[in-house]
Picture 1 (tube, rainbow, N blue to C red):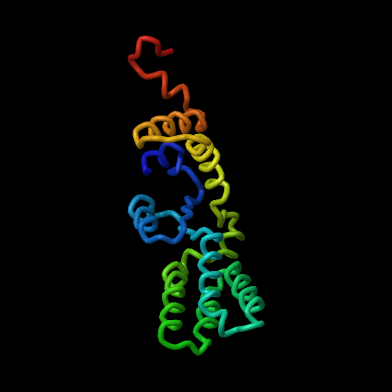
Picture 2: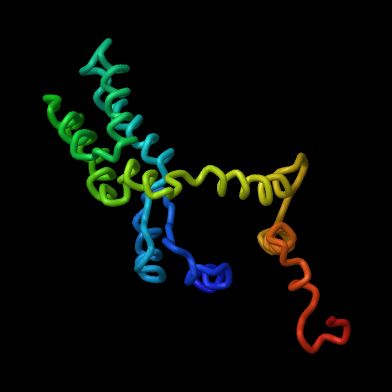
Length: 184
């Protein structure tokens, strides 16, 4: 990962940015290999977690739930995580529901510095990984998930390596190696 980032010029960009879904292992790797990078939680994943939080408190809000959720989504878009935390904690939950709410809020507390979406947008940074995920689906999913396909791990790895090389515009590097009798 670090070698590929260097090959692609990570050391020469104005602001290296790493988008992730909020999983701790992603941020651990990012911090280890790219401590200077801005870390951003993918907005789509953050919205999914906010909807999960909404499911925990929906019973208490009744018909006010859609408005409550819309306000929290707007706060998320602004990167106002303290407002989300305060709104959820203002609801008088007990026992299991309170634990479920606190578990859902932990995601936002842990990732708050990575959720400054209004600030990131103002700097011209991406806050979503949809384009990358669509590319993966196109390059990988289209080839491996065709009707009737069955792959061993070895076979899938081989074909995906070739597809990624071709899609990356690195096909010539795959076939032309220094010292090879047919090298240009």
